[in-house]
Figure 1: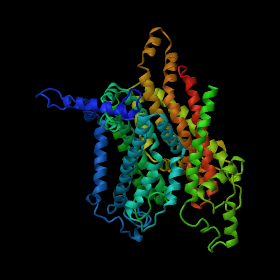
Figure 2: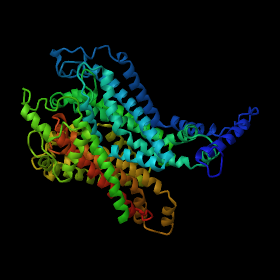
Figure 3: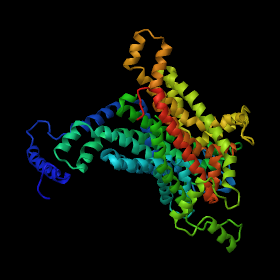
Figure 4: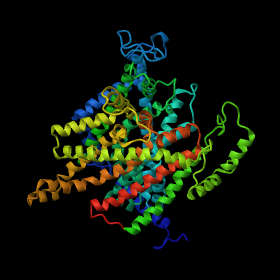
Length: 332
Length: 307
């Protein structure tokens, strides 16, 4: 069993390769002479792609406008008190549905709360949902995509069928179902409410990224440098970590950035349906829902949160578009 | 090709089973008492609970419940709601409106989306191109419920060009405005996708060859367009499912009795049988449409062969 033969199992072959690798590694890790390029094979490559992209981005007007908007929104989400000194939860019923004035720039809503303050404070929930969902989707989708693409065969078969199952579930109806299963009350902490919405969206949203990651990995996997690493006896984990992942990440980042805006929009839609974020969380979707009934008499209640929501989605999609142009010049 | 179709149909079976099981598990495993609020303000009489428990096999383990349910489903018995109406009847009422709305939305997507994409893609950097790019970006950014309310308020109520709500029976003419609203976001994506693909293909070697040998511009564009449509058709196929399931908002705003509203209502009143049946139906339609899309690839691009 332990005798290495040509027909021996892959374990034996791996041992031989490991020996070979160790012998090679001693050569490779010798200190490089001053000024010479480092002999490891993945130093220049990722840097050049990202460096290129960065050079492109800096000159792109879309990117500059988008990132300034996103920056303002992030500051708004983190420190809303910088923009308004009014407490968004302090409402005077007497002011109900009063139009914009010098005291309240955006007017008052049905409960007599300051619409401007509520709109500013609403940024936090939307941006948190967008960022958390995108991160979660990238992790789930990326992981499944890598496993399916890299290992192929029956692993790919199972992973792809699982992806198909979740892809076939309608996003909106599915999220409604999940959120109904875990209802929030007014006592639920704000972050938990946001977490549930993130969970629902991420659970149904990862499929697209998994598919993109899978095809991207399959392309990279057959490149010479991956074959070389394999011939040198690198383990699967090392090949994935050092070679496949950095080289197949660009399309995933592009799609993830663009979908960040779409998730903010989806959150607003769920909140609008009364099933996503719940009061006391302040959210643009809830605000639009509350205002919809009075659109004919008090349009300001609907206009301002809807406009902020649209501008936020606009900013993130613009940013994603610019990053796509930079990372994938072919698609321009 | 027949063999390919058959294989794809067989591959659908595990996906359908997986999807329906997830839906089924989520619906019936919802925490809380399934009979809460079913009998008005007082608790349900034990006889009713016993009967309903037996009818829906609620005492069995989830997997057994699921197998029994699917057995009924295959024979065409979609079950009953807790109110005693047949789920099949409820679907039959909601389905025509949804199918009409979705078909109209897809048609709008194809005509206007591809049309705008072609105009923009043929003249990259021109005024039209920038107009299409900017307007689609704006449309994508505005959430659908805002578009819906704005369209209903401005076009329906103030200008009176369209009926603001849809009448009974959902006549085609009433559905035009809702279909535009439903299609709006996808329309923008279709236009952008077509533009990108066409612009790229217009720089391809075969287009230069065709132009060089003196082919009229119309025919050159037709060649390039055919090659550009594959990703667009893929997007539209996936979108079909999203439109059918995502019409909840549009249906709500324009007062249409459709599948989306049916499922939304059924989820909040915990009508498990209705939810499972309706979503299963959406999933099957989605899978069939996507198979059709895959088969369409070969029509668009004869180089693609099915093994």
